[in-house]
Length: 128
Image (cartoon, rainbow, N blue to C red; front, side):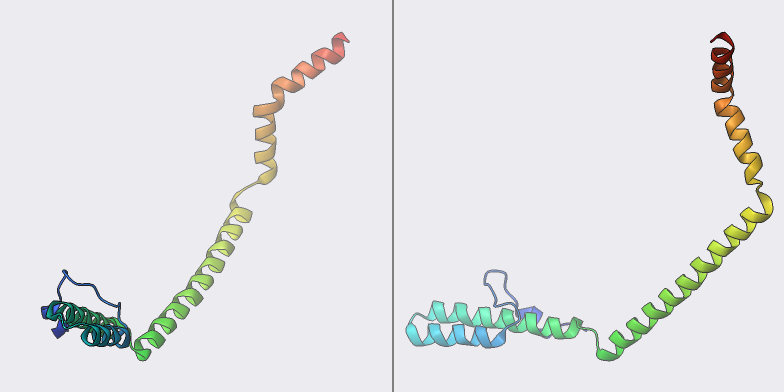
């Protein structure tokens, strides 16, 4: 949906965000204090830009139904993710228990990394 006020928006003028009441107050202040048509025209354009911002904000805001649906989807994703993570952790644990001999791994590592040190210690003990 296209914001019909965007057709009249002008980048030459500011806005008051989406606060229409504040923009109307600005128009009233300038119209009351000035006989200058340019000042009042400026204030009116600021009001128009502010209205366009307010309409755009309303148009892009999700409906309560959409927010509730998004929350439900997020919850279901989180629930499913937890179930899957627990399942994967258990499968890894089961596979490791069934397929890996930890004692062999430790012994292999010790032989690969400590055998030179053990030989040096034995030499020191024999010489000493």
